[in-house]
Picture 1 (tube, helix red, strand yellow):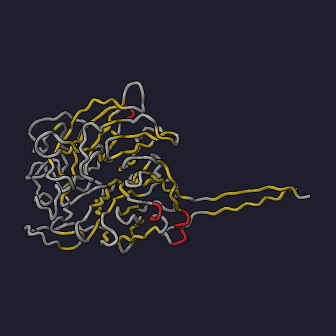
Picture 2 (cartoon, one colour):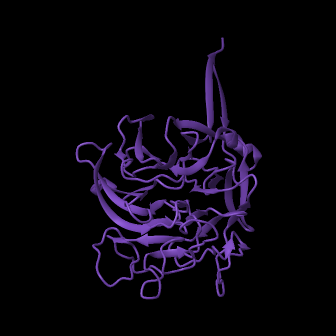
Length: 401
């Protein structure tokens, strides 16, 4: 006769409560990196994860190991003199498996004048899927006023268009007046079409203009740069799409007091998030004329000390039902990670108590093809995977005489 002993622990239902955090852990995914600032996937069913180093390398993690040869080396052309400059964004074309195109966002020194934010297109090499062709096509360039507030993240939306996060040009107090100026591309979220050949007639504001404008962009056929999708942002360092709903979550870094997460429902452009008339949901005295400004308040805000710089994250859509729909985000200085969920009374955030002791500086979150989430630790030179232990199953069988 056999006796079976089986123990099964099923995930708890939402909302998350204290004991649910026992099902979350951080596992080192990659180490020995130079200032990692991004974690992406190509959407090609390869299972690979791509890591951005701010100094200019894109590395491939394949079957749990970092390839010895980088996917792409941009160290010779980028300028990372400031800690907010360098290689800042990577986005794979929705048809990457067919055309091999991917796009990067980096800062460069043109040799005279201001540094430039450059969005460029590359293509995977014909002979090796783990190495890119170094030939570059520049899609969009924007002059920068300073070495900070360069934004940098890029994503393709579910509509197939490329979204580009741009900071307000740097300095403090929006000193160049860009965020509320719809004739400037800085302090904005941009949306462009990279698949259609450029044609004349549009009110384009980029220095390089190898793109066209989606006809539903809010300032088409009116006053303002046609590239603008939303505005009133200070430094939207990291943003993401909810892969299930298409909603946008923007982590906009504040100045003296307030950090914020802005929310944009899918396909809803034209929103003004308030900077520099507002910091978070609070009036900000910057000396600019804010007459008639009606901003959209953030869904989440938190104050400084010990926090200082929000790092926008992702809505979890991975294998676990427990954390489905929770937005993970963090702070660069305090290395705190929060989980946020929307309820009847609005958005509520809960601090993950086990994350902070492991991290040195949360520069970015990322996700893989399965929806698993990752955290890039810039100063620690590591990337961690967020593990969800939803089901523990063990069995033993013993013969009984």
